[in-house]
Length: 330
Ligand code: TYM
Image 1 (cartoon, rainbow, N blue to C red):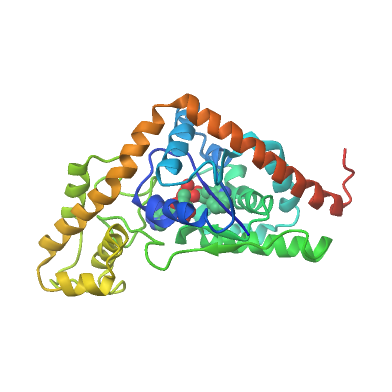
Image 2 (spheres, rainbow, N blue to C red; image 1 turned 90 degrees about the vertical axis):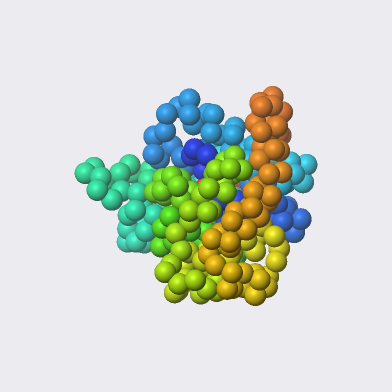
């Protein structure tokens, strides 16, 4: 079985990235051969500052490792190190994809809202590159947060359509792995929205590298509701439900047991306990991250080793797929 996922090197990483995705990278690396990559080609769609993109590519790699990915077990690589294969596969899939389905992508709509020029073409075809990332590694399972569900559906459709046109079983049709609990971490100040690097509120976004005091402060000032009962009800009490999910992940205690423990003790007491639990959960990850991010030579060694394996696998899949299309192989 193959597992694959990617994360963009855009700024610092937050609790949504960790709880929704990164921690599952670590657990899933034991289920088969795993590939995790830093999606710098995707990040380019928003034209980041070049120095910042380089910095964030290394720091995001350090974060993936700090979250528990073992480079001797899983392949960690940078997408642009395998750019020819990813770009070629993306082109082939662009010819299979249609405008109508890409026009329905909600992330594209969100990212281009209010933009007079409609955003870059790269941003529009972004989900097709994502599909290429996945099929190149014959990925069976893709651990992601809930916000990637639509992109994963498109990846499945494109793989199936390619196979219908060019031959059954040429591409593996991937399945998303989205956790029931923690698959959508919400902004602590606005539980109607997901926690996000680009659209979140500063006070409602907990960075994995936040100092313990800052984490605690953000949890204590989390927006809840006018009631006073700590109960898991995502519809009626999205703020409290979000905190219960986070505390469950941080402590391993079942949500029903947390409800029993904190149910009538007041929101203040619960929010402090949830914050303290998160500080304890984040502490070893933050420490490992700070150690790793300072050792650029080691990070570069790991990424180089990962690129070699990734190229080997992606190259073979690309050749297999292209041979079916009638394009002459060089
Ligand atoms: P990105 O970089 O935005 O996010 C990385 C991962 O974090 C998850 N995530 C969340 N999960 C729960 N709650 C949240 N608030 C939250 N915010 C982010 C995302 O779902 C993701 O799993 N397009 C992808 C990168 C990508 C990719 C791929 C992923 C490129 N190619 C191929 C899988 C397979 C993205 O922008 O993720």
